[in-house]
Length: 327
Length: 262
Ligand SMILES: Cc1cc2nc3c(=O)[nH]c(=O)nc-3n(C[C@H](O)[C@H](O)[C@H](O)COP(=O)(O)OP(=O)(O)OC[C@H]3O[C@@H](n4cnc5c(N)ncnc54)[C@H](O)[C@@H]3O)c2cc1C
Ligand SMILES: Nc1ncnc2c1ncn2[C@@H]1O[C@H](COP(=O)(O)O)[C@@H](O)[C@H]1O
Image 1: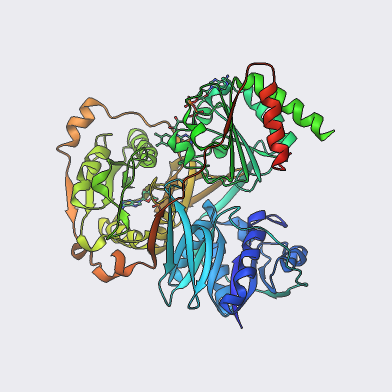
Image 2: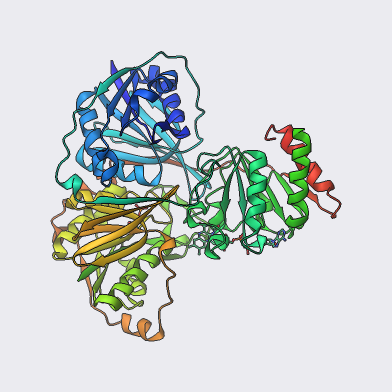
């Protein structure tokens, strides 16, 4: 039986939510594709994660336990995946459509004669090949694409496009990969990893709920209010470019065309006008809430629920209301 | 030191995009085209390398003849020369096809030390091109840089990720891509705009680079798009006005509870 490979993105020993979504999507398509789902785990931790991967549909886990997966840039993952392609019977790899992983897919496509489709939000199988849909121009348009016949299909899956579901599979078979890194793979080295201002809040790309703040907050302290609201909702915190440019919140939390694209079930923006470049990163959120004192702000055009008012009146009261309801 | 900055012409984000049904691409004539804004950050880094170590910087653009104004625009920031690859066969290339053309152009350009890409283009937004070019040329790709230093034949980059950044380094030649957090681009000066008009600008075809037409363009694309539809319109939502009494906050809280968000 052929295999669908799913490259697991993980933070140390824990698979990210997107990885479980990818496995579930692959498991859902496995029958149509006439294939089993195999996970690929690069770096230490595969054995600990195996039962979770199995529960989400993986029947096999190819793993490479070396710290070298983190010591160099991009190519260790590429070369380990080449080993996985060698070991497996496959023409398809699902990967997380996030910045660093897209580099891995791009380099692998050149080495292994593949085609890449990024930011996939919908998938089906036709004549044994995948047909992928994705949203472009900030969600204004939807396109359908395929990788050319005979080429390795490298499909980058968008966050929150597919539900993560346990399909009840047992423990997968563990298969160690034999990886010998080339000199080229060691040419760029990771000198250090800087984690700054990390919190327990979910990452904005993964979070089911994202609370976002903009210029209307008026100052850096406004983000404390955003964080309070986020914590009542179990949300991640994002920002508009006006806010990151002002230095109120780090750039990596910027939502929009030149920041990150998010697709949570709920986006709640305060003091954000909804410029097209901002909408390009959040328009595909399932539910959109806006709090803005200007009734004409464009964000209201796409809001499911809008409050016209001063965020410094509305948000503290909202936090209170939510806390009382929680009991 | 020799630096090359690949730049792209993109439709203005704010413009309405009309799809050309025959080619399934955005009708470029219907919307204003601009230098991809992400490339301004790459250009600013290059200008800084000119100032700090006398770098010689070439702008590289793959695109139709009409994109020449974008090359001139890039030159107006004070860069030294332009190189444009123009060929009808390039139309319809996917990211990997574009990467092939850029890689061949870089090979032909020879002795460069550093290539500075934008991390993405604002239209395609694939982020695939820089890494693919690096792979084709067999050099390291230090992408998503929020900080860049070049010293003693070595490049050090702070590679942005969800939790902060990795400090990574490699010897030259190398390929980097930059995110907008890296700097604040300055505007071109009047002098720069005037000088850009007379900077050398070389135009080459695929034949000049030894690229076979079937390797690129729509026919050579590894990933093909075959349908392009507008997103279904969204229904108008509820809007409530806050009178300062807190009633609106209560209504929003009700809605959030009803939707099971709280
Ligand atoms: C190339 C390019 C790329 C860009 N990329 C991005 C991107 O990735 N992400 C992004 O967000 N932007 C991006 N932008 C910028 C974008 O065009 C807007 O400038 C930006 O999104 C505005 O941020 P904002 O909504 O916070 O600020 P503003 O547009 O200034 O809006 C602030 C809003 O707050 C409201 N307000 C003020 N005070 C209060 C109050 N007390 N209570 C309630 N409401 C209040 C105002 O009514 C106003 O609507 C980009 C721009 C360009 C040119
Ligand atoms: N046609 C092109 N000509 C020159 N450079 C390009 C072209 N397309 C993409 N690039 C470069 O590749 C970067 C990433 O683009 P992309 O992979 O399309 O998101 C851009 O910021 C440019 O620096």
